[in-house]
Image (cartoon, rainbow, N blue to C red; front, side, top):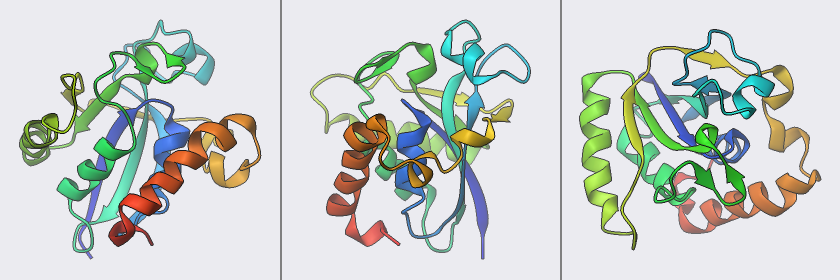
Length: 175
């Protein structure tokens, strides 16, 4: 096994977490916060938009099964990287599209991925690519949120369609 970590933000972390938990080669997905200027932020602080954190997921995966490039391919499918600081009705810097890289190789792959997938969208990609400085794990009730709350309104109308879209479009990546 070749264990690696990716940290991505693409709107509400519940959506990304739900999709990546269904992805083959993914060992663990943790919802959290990154990119801000306040230590140990709470969900309420991040939701205020005043901490500059993004809602992110930290994905631990087996790189001998799924590559970082494939993780990014899924990332582009499951959110809109052309909307600045928003995903659907979720608006604010905490919902921005961002790739936090862990090393120079990830940085280069992320930049190349933007070039590759940029042609697939009608508007320019606004995804930030930044080094990960610190990751803060979100509160316990945010972990495995979709799995634990499938009948919650947001999960039914926003998260579930993203998961189903992923399962249809990327069957080769589904566990």
